[in-house]
Image 1 (cartoon, rainbow, N blue to C red):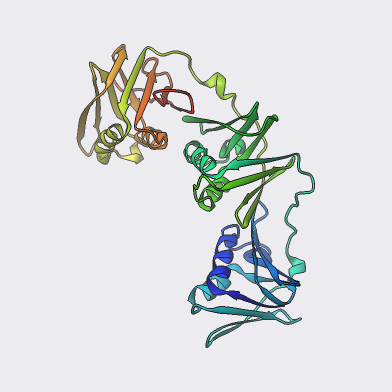
Image 2 (image 1 turned 135 degrees about the horizontal axis):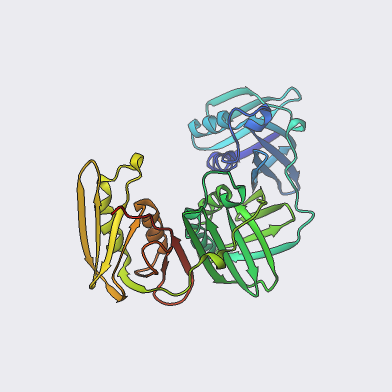
Length: 372
């Protein structure tokens, strides 16, 4: 293999593909990235892939391919070398013994690569059941408003992902971890019916890749066991999660005895001002009173006491609710709108956080029992 490629371009490709590489794998090749160079009439194409048997990331770009070929290079070593190379054109060459020469300006490296035949094959897209195009900015927003409620402990693997529900030109994304639930809806140009669960770690990577530009599209290619996200020159393939996922519609309480409208940033500030004295080891919580046009946040721990009061609009009964400050803050910060509506149905019923108008998102936060 002999290729010439601009340093920054190949460095970004290797860095992105390396995010799917895990260190200290049983197979040394899985600690590397697979480089495939194909010579064409007008130059050539280079493809760099990382894969940890759960998620694979592939980057493609045009480059000057003098001689095609395949090989594997340790991802961390390759990325470190490229980062420290001077700006300019990088020449990468390898021989039949997998000795790799890297040159850029007056800088040269000689390292040992690995045989590409030992690299596991990434799942293909031959059995696609559905191909769906989504607006990149919309998908990025939907991910940010559901990812915070994904379970981090894999005792129930399905809950470590976000459920995608496509039905009648509507996409609903749902996540839950037993203490909170997030639902996000958007109209889409797909009339089919499709449901699957995407790992939260994969969606985190997709969110990093998507710029949020409304002109950018993301293509989803869904098979029975995998999903491929195509974002610009990158593609991400991951195994879909299996298992039972709670019926989110049954989990959402109907009605409410108290409805509150409050400025989102003001509410976030109030909870944050109450939080510094909370001791996470003792699972301390804050007491929030919704009464007489005010929201009062208070907390008493072994460290001390905190109190804060803000104005709001309240319709219904006065009520006091105990919250984990982290769970409440996560939901408020994910709201991404100037005002939020908080619907409460007693001190122990899950609290709904919604936009003042419409149902584009709904967050549930399970309260904690207040000590008398």
